[in-house]
Every structure is written in C-alpha cells, then in structure tokens.
Image (cartoon, rainbow, N blue to C red; front, side):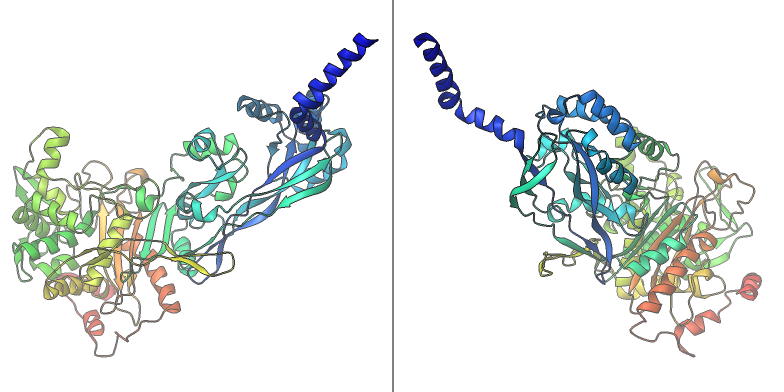
Length: 616
C-alpha cells in the first residue's frame, strides 16, 4: 500500500507541479478558444467623398480538426452541405504549415445564405465546424477602375515570411491601390476568448479585445468622370487617362478589358484564375501604365518642341510634300497620297503631314529627338505609385549599340520622327505630354491619392502635388504648338473634328500607329483599314487638353486596332470632356462670337480641303 501510494504521489507531483502549466493549457484548450478577429479594411472614396470600396460582413465556414471525433466523416458531410469539395485539401494545407490541430481552419469564405442555413441547421452533425462573421472587401462598381483600385487576397507563405504581424487567413492587398496603401488600409486585429462545448459550439465570450478599423483613403478620381470614361470605352480594348495639368492628379484611369475585383475576395477559384491569366486579351494588364505602343503622329508634338528649342525648326519653316520622299534608297510615303504641297509647321501639325516631320527628324537627328523625349518624360517611369509600370522605349544611337550591337542608320530616324520604329510609350506618358503642353512646360508626378483619413474623419495625411520637371521653354514657341493643336480639333483641315465641343476650345493631336509590318509604306493618318483583319489594324491615338488658355484637364486615349485616331480615339475623349465641363464649367469664357476659336472654325486651309470643310 505504501508503494502504491508513493507511486501515485510521484505521479500527482509530476502532473500537478512539474507539468502544471502544460496540463492547465490542455484543459483550457478543451473549453476555451482564442479567436482572432480581423479588422475591417479602410474605405476608399472618390475626390468628392463618394464611396468606391467598402467592407461588408461575410460568413465563413471554419473547422477545428481537434474537435471532430471522426474528421473524415465530418468533412464528407460538410462538403455535402456546402455543395463543394476541397475541404480536406485545405485542412491538409494547414497541417503542412505546422498549424496546431486546435487552430481553426477556414474551409470556405463568403458563404451564400442557403449555405449558412444548411450549416446552422445541421450543427450537431458537424462537430468542430462553426460560422465566423468576418469583414469582406466589396467593390461597389464592379469592374470600374479595377486596375487602379486593385484587389485583396489571403496571405501566402511569402507574405508571412516578410510580414511577421500577419497570420494565416488574413487578407492583404495584392494589386493596385490595395497593395500600395496596405499599411493605411489594414487596421489592427482584435480577438475574443470564447468558451465552447464538446463539439466546438460557442457558449459565451470570456474576454474581448476590440479591433481597430483601417484608415480611409480619399482618391483624386472623380466618380462621374471615371464613369463617363468607362462608358466611352465600352466595347473597346485600350486605355483612357485624364489628369489635372495643374496638379498631376489622376481624374480618371480606364483600362479595357477589365476584371471584377470581387472574384478575388475569399480566394479566387482555380477556374476563374486560369480564365483570367490565359485570356488572350490580358484583362489583368493595366494598359494605362503597362501597355506600351508606338505613339504614331502624337509624337510629332515632341518633334516640334525639340526642333523649336534646338533651333533646327522655326514656325515659318516650310517643306514641300508631294506625297512622299526618297531617303536612303527608299521612298517614305505621307498618309495623303496626293501630298500637302508647300506646308509650314502649324499646318503640318494640323494636317499631320508625315513628309514634313521626316524632314524635321533628319534635321534633328535621333539623339536630339531622344534627348527631348526624355526631357518630356518618355523612356522612363512617370513615378505613379502603381505596380509594374513600364518605362517604354526611346531609341538613340547609344541605345541601339547597347541593345543590338549595331550602329544607327540615318533612315531609321524617319520612322522615329513619326512615332514608329523602336519608339514605345504608355498612355499615361502621353497624357503627361498633353498636360505639359497645356501648362507651358511644367510636369507633375501623377498621383491618385488626395488624403488619408482616420476612423473619426480627421485628416491623417495629405498628398501635395510634386513637380517632376519645369522646362524653360520659349512661351511664344509653345503658344505656336498650342495654336496648332487647337486647329487640329477646331478647323476644317484638322484630323480631330469629333473631339470639338461648343463653347470650349479643345486642343489635341491624333495618331495612327502601325501594329505590324509596313502595310502602306507610311505611318501617318488616313489609311483605310476596312479590309484589314482586326488584329492587324492600326492603333488609334488621341491626346487633348482644354480649355486652351486656362487648361483644367488633359487626356490621352488609345483604342487598340481602332484604325484612325480622329475617328476612333477622339469620340471617347469628346464624351469625357463633355461630362467634365458639365460638372466643372470653364473658369473663363473662351468661345465668343468673334473669339479665336470661332474664327478658327471658319478657316478653310486650302481648296484641297473643300470636301472636309463641307463635311464640317
């Protein structure tokens, strides 16, 4: 008896004293669960404080493997009531991550109401299974501004290695604004200490630590302008960007085709992800900053500024355009087969004469063109805080030597001068070019966030405009360029009549960029693509700003395989400008009965344009 009592005492001492802490924790684990509560992410508003993204309650199915007496049977029933499979794989993945058996595993997020009812009704048949109410991200306007807003997803192993304060099951910004502003939007998680019964059902809350919601973000985007841009680009592949030339604020950014960010919430299905990543139209690509295209005739604005500033070009410089020119043993055509005759800079911009700018390019040389293209922001990233922005390509003799180990041939400069050849730019870069012309040479860093707000509505941080470059351009010469861009839209000989607005002086420049090969022997305006297969048709460009004397908005639009810039890309910008000036009337009346725009509309450049004048 003494021996038995001694053994029992030793055992009791071992359990009660030496391993008291471990045994106590095991006992508590049978009845107490520590449940981490994710904080709601901050809201996202447009510039007029209208919500674009919010957070709503979501039901998630959760299982604690340790609480299921027969885990395989529980999984089978759970999949039956959820109408899905893959529960076993999710539990297995959690075990692979060394997650304790008592740690809850989320097996399905964002349950539908019938699924919620099914789990609640059959709770006793599902030991270890419970419902969690968690905050879920919701994008109020579906695909609108999807590439800018981005999306969230569950943290993965790489995220956990980089961020020690995240846990499995947490959401994190994966793309766009959600990723860039993650530290502000995330908030601080809370938690609950919950008493449960033998099958894991919650009995009562023992202790609670409240969460702290994330901060809200106020964007520079205007919901009305964004909607107008989305509607204008409906059914078209391409991009449209609108900026404030006086601050660099992004007013609208559209990339089509787009995607619905809500499909990523709660974990995107493999079939949906495969459909997005294998789609030949690349809906996940933000064409506004990642799409690089030859700029076509919009690049003639760069040539003009470079030539005027370098002294190789003057407003009255005249070249003869017979419809083409021979150079380096080859004929380079103008888009107008019959030519433009003797033409000076103003009309060369208005009528987009290729031969004129071939000559401008020859006089400048590729290296001076490249120099001014870089000064104007091409060939480098704009600095906008979005993922994977492309810098584009601006060729030079040194660039070609480094990349291809070949010398630059003078004839290649002709293609560069009309925005073809190796030249590649993004829509945002061209919107920046329009903004610089509008502002007289000031380039702001583009940004899309106005301020960060605390939960109580107070302002935590304000984002001020940042000047990237301030060019000391000759105001008179820049005025010549602006006058020509004005007549591109407002005269009979211009190429962008469809962008004109009554009462507003719109300035712009069209471009038609070849996609492959050299179908016509030229790279300018006016090619009839009706018989060309869609995938080989030219891209259509249009850049613009308005009003002329007190610019409030600058834009760039590309319609992939749209054909002519004036007919395909100008109408979307017209629609956006029309909506903009309905909301924000010009500060000064620019169109009067005897004003400059009225007189410009009455111009007919020459007899060759009689048909166009009649149409206008």
